[in-house]
Image 1: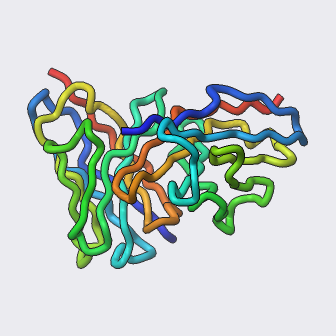
Image 2 (image 1 turned 60 degrees about the horizontal axis):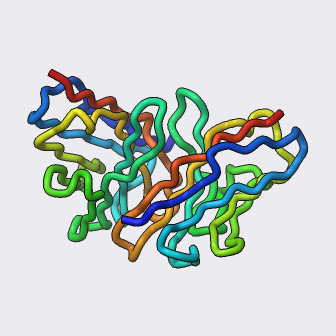
Image 3 (image 1 turned 135 degrees about the vertical axis):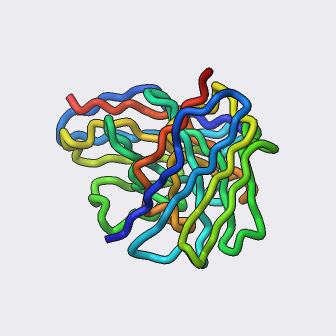
Length: 116
Length: 110
């Protein structure tokens, strides 16, 4: 069965850091672009970041640029999102999606709460 | 960054046809924006219906179709079913660098 499973969310204080993981099973991430999307419960979807197939090219939404870093480990079939200098407005459910241009699969999301 | 616009809400009768649209503040939407359409039901992760403007995943019912219409991306639902009641989001890609989602359309089948 094809699956994307996010992990690493939790409660963190403002200014803190978290690293999210997205483990793929049933297919290989190798060769495909991958994406992170977030959603405040009850609100709309917001694109966060994307990474190309070998990790050499990345892009970010303006709201997270300079604070978040997307990366991947193709050997582990896993996508990451390092989140630093977290703010209360980063509180959301974070989804990974892909592979590639089809966006055929989404994970179930991992909840990040930034609060003191 | 650009702003992507969608109808906040639409209603369709069971068996009826409805078209949702996705516009860009930067001008006409073209195939180069690689429009996507997603369906999300309460408590569930989004599901991708349409990618690259017109391509439908094989597991998506044929009653969903994507197109370009009047300078916007469009999602047409023909023969609406009660289970199609959901939030629908579009996204557009800009210069292959960043992606912007629309605010979503709440579709009621009534």
